[in-house]
Length: 93
Length: 239
Image (cartoon, rainbow over all chains, first blue to last red; front, top):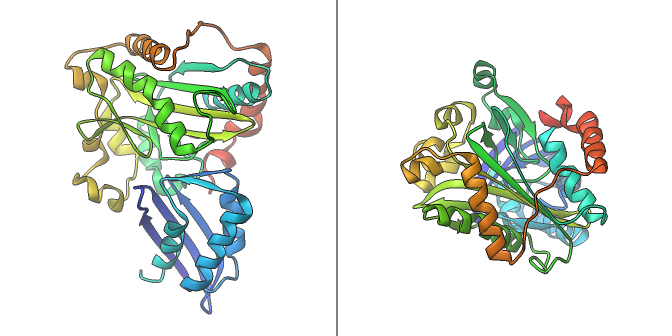
């Protein structure tokens, strides 16, 4: 099932999620938007890490936090919590 | 080619092969999208065709901006650890390296203020957006100042999602931006604005800028980046 959400982060930036869900799990996901995240290549890593993750808050929050500590990624206009909320917002549409 | 030069300079500065650099430039009709943006979602392709607007992706994040001969772009490339931006925090980089442009605009009589995350605004309307990165052992910041741009095209070629405009209490992107010309109520050239920004940078950062041209190696790297990246549809339009 295709799911999408356009989520406005607390810093005002937009996080746009387009994902494919199967049996409650993320099969593939594309994260786009006008936020800042360095190193820039890390967004692709986050997308890859999210594959096969249950579309549930606890698991997604754990994974996003793991992503930040593993990559030392630094954002502007977007926080780890914004990515979690944007992903979960796809369930509401 | 302009976006390829944008990448070539901080790479060379980071390698110690070029000095700290401020570059001014402008494009003909072009939409420049941020590196994380989806061209298909952000840009009205049909309107771009009709208005002869090109679409190019830059290597930094942030939102889409419309370039035409009525805007002025500036880019600052510094080696990592430079005294102006010692703490490697991207938000601090935006703030600190926007100050020169803010001061330059104020010298012209524009009541410009930095507005986090990355805007320069006048009475709540955006007159310049900035983007940047810390990579290749360099700190890079670039901004796009709307001097006398055609804002009617801007409204046509950009798709701005409703959620983005909601808290601004405006119905379109066109109504939340302004130009230096409109703020001053007179025609002004990009050269006049550039000279003011140079003055703003020199006084804010206590530096002296010297005009110059790209080094041969910067040109060679920019040409290579243009061939392998910035001229390619897969970079500019995917995903």
